[in-house]
Image (tube, rainbow, N blue to C red; front, side, top):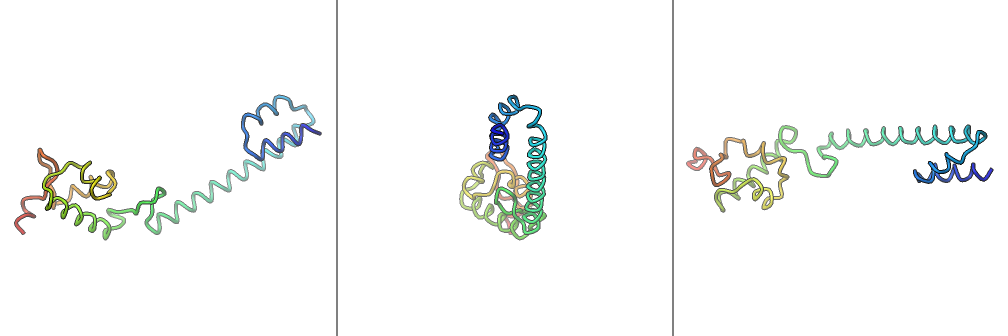
Length: 138
């Protein structure tokens, strides 16, 4: 009887090490109860997976990645345009910069910069990214 209480406590608290030790000590009479608890935990895990999936889908619909930064580029052209303007203003003030410096000074994630910098407004030079010559004349 005491083994059942130990098994229940370990299984519901998620203490993997204690659960393994308890399983090693369990007798044949404890196995049906352990099976029930494992099944219940499996159902809880499946429910949590479904809830997480729904949350990921909902965040994508409203334009937020899981880590919290807004989705830009093709999925959010307004944000991409704002970020391009920010980069343009920075480069017009400071001149050529490498992507790391641009990311640091603008707060734009490095992973988003590649797509933004490949825009016709910008070009790569030896000193870093700069405003394209065709854009400078406008």
